[in-house]
Length: 103
Image (cartoon, rainbow, N blue to C red; front, side):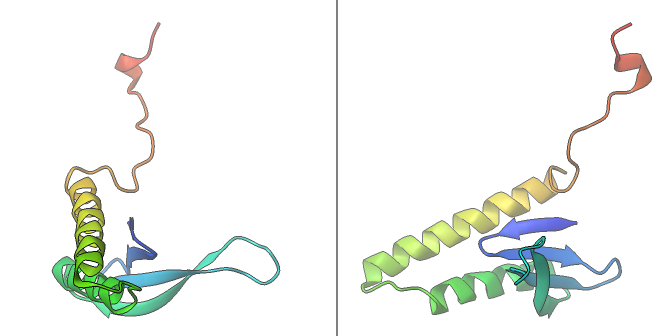
């Protein structure tokens, strides 16, 4: 499972942990890797943390700008969670069953 929310990618260790990762660029120009930055037991905890991170790192200079930043972050989180609920995350293209193929 890989869920992209903002600059973080949420992965699972296959057991009970959700891992928030940042993408780390390689100095040799190779494929970027994921660097763990936080661990969670519930998706809800990750979502709150991701929103907090966005607010803390915001460059907003007014309450109105901060409100816009928060609304954008919430929209990203909601969209990613809805994709997860609908099974769209990490599945790629569906393969056709033999019955579905054109003969």
